Length: 469
Image (cartoon, rainbow, N blue to C red; front, side):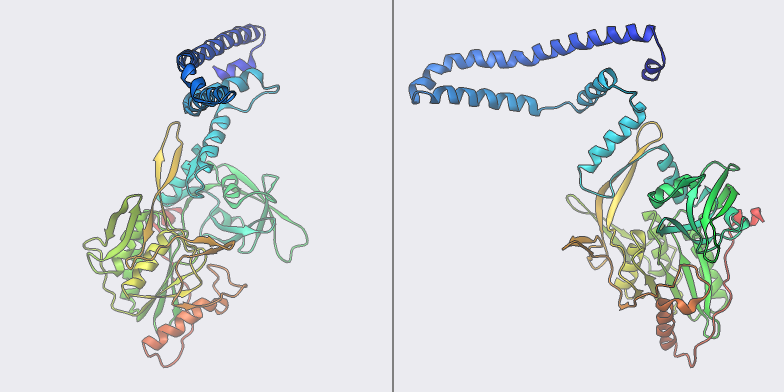
C-alpha cells in the first residue's frame, strides 16, 4: 500500500488529500481527547483555589496553580505508546517530507537501530535479513562466496589466505592481496563486515575484485564465480616432526567444530603425538554449545566450563558433557591473541583454571557477554545481551574501558609480543614468535634433546571438500 502510494498519479493525489484531511481530523480528535483530563483537572482545581489563596501570599497562589497544571501536563506527556509514536511519525514523513522517503523497511530498520543504540551495548544489535542469513551460514559452517579469510587493511580488506580448493584459490587470489574494490565500488570507507557482505552472494553468480598486490605496478582485476564454501574450522600442523609436537588451529566454534576436532585428535593420537598446541588465535568465537563440546574433549566429565551470570545472579553453570573426554595424557598449551574472543575465551579460561594448559601469546579480546539471538518478523532477528560469562575460577571475561583504553580479557601465563610480519596461516613458522615460544615450552616439558623441523601441514578435508574435488 505504501509503495503504490509513491508510484501512482492523479488517483494517488486525491487519495493523499483525502488521507491528509482524515489525518488532520484525527489529530484534532486526539487533541480534544488529551485536553479533556486537563480541563477536568482545572475545573476541580477551581474548588481548591480558595484554600490555596487563603494559605499563601498574593501572587503565590497562581504560581502554585501553574506549577500543578504544568506537573500534570508533564506526567501526561511522559506516557508514550511506542507503536503509536512510530506510526504517527511515519505518517507525518509520508505526508510532509518534500522528497521521496526511503523504503519503509529502511525507515523501520533505522528506527530499531536507534532504539538499540540507546542501550549503550555494542553487542546488542538488529540483524536485517541479509545479515541474519550470513550469521546462520557462519554458525552452520558453510556459505556461498569466494572462500578467503579477510582482515582489515588500509584502503580495503587484506586476504589472510584463500581456502584450499576455493573459488578464490582457483582464480589466483593470494595471501597478502588487498581487495580495494568490489564490482567497481571502493572499499576505502567500508567496514570489513560490509566488504564481506558485498563479496558474498548467491551460488554461481560472479563478483569482480580489484586487488592491490605487492610487486605489481597497477591494481589487478579478478572475476570470480561464487560457490559453496566450507568455513575454515580445523587445520592440523606437525610443527616439530622429530618431537611429534602437533598444533590444532581451531578457527571458529561452528556446529561442525566438535566433529572436526574429534577427527583431528584421533589423527594426532594415531600418529603418536607427544605434545599438543591448541591454537585459538584470530578465533572470534561462535556457538556456546560448541564451546562446551570442545572443552569437554579436554576436561574430565562434569567439570565446570563456564558460569553464566544474568541480571539476578548466577543463571547457569555449564559443565562438560558425558562421553566426550579424550584423555590425551600429553602436555598441552593454548595460544591466544587480541582476536581470540567469546567462545575462545571460555575454552581457554576453562583449560587454564583446571590446570590442563597454560596460555601463551597476547591478551585476548575480552568479550564476555552472552547474546541471545531472537528471530523477529520478516526474516530478521535481534541479538540481545542477556548475561555475562565467568571462568570456573570466577574471572570476568568482559573488557572495560579504563582511561580510554580497553582493559580485560584473559592475560596469558606467558606473554609474547607477536612479530608484525606474522600472518595467521603462514606456512613459514619462523616468523611466529608466539608459536616458537610454545614449542620451546613443550620441548622442555617432554624433555626433548633437540628441536625438530616442522613438517608439511596435514589438513583434514571435510566431506563437502572431497565432493568438490
